[in-house]
Length: 150
Image (tube, rainbow, N blue to C red; front, top):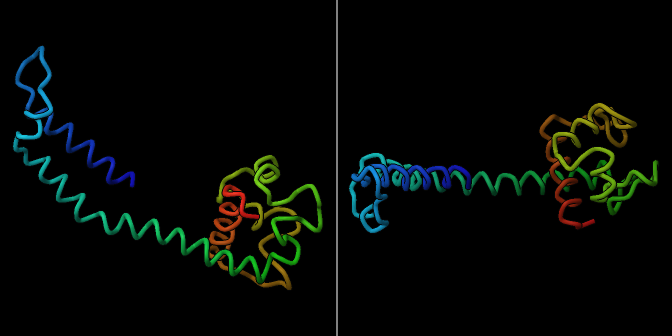
């Protein structure tokens, strides 16, 4: 949505700039909206063209969480069922503990699982996951923690 917001700001500011004729008095909104401007037309056209891609980007994130959930259930749930930690009880995947120990950031969670502690990039039964798999698992863990879904 940031892309659309940026273009909306560009649209309004470019229209305002073209409608501003007085050095002391800003133009009225009615005058701004009636003033044709090639930059504004281009911004609107770009917003229309990009809007399906922005929506698709949001749904891709949801797919990452869903893929991460499947990987978590197979590789992580034995020790972390319900966001708990069977190895180090106080270091759960609950929001407060996660925030204190690792941070509420998917990149930090991914780094921890790939490089720190007992995990070191290898999950249950020695399963080796791809970098994208770790990204998806981290997205799922973060989603569960932040949304208090555990």
